[in-house]
Length: 135
View 1: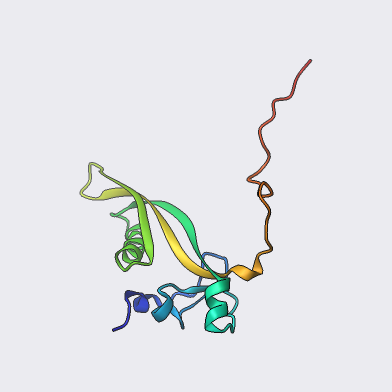
View 2: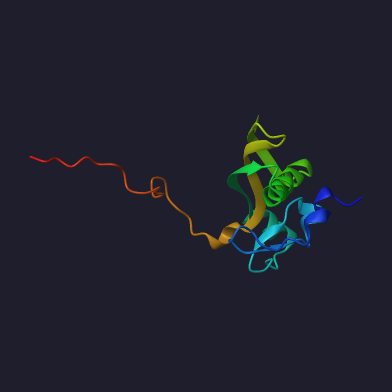
């Protein structure tokens, strides 16, 4: 039996980080993201391919057709095991529609051998805040 990701095989954009490839998704359980799927042996694939997650969030008004469609696409990914919901908050406005704030993770496989090794303490998330003395 096919896995539940079969319905997403027409998606090709990997959040701006490469094309999505679905050829191995039946066995791997996730799409591969990159320019092309590497031609590794099964052992190499197991050693070099990494499972990565993209954190995402959004606020949607279910009364606006375009926003509701985007929200339903997120819920579809969650319901079918590709995405993982982290947080959701719903509230009703004076209208009959809901507003929804949701946070989720989208999972992909990527070639981990493309990234050079980084030693401890070498990753930076921006410049630390340093107050400047005015004396």
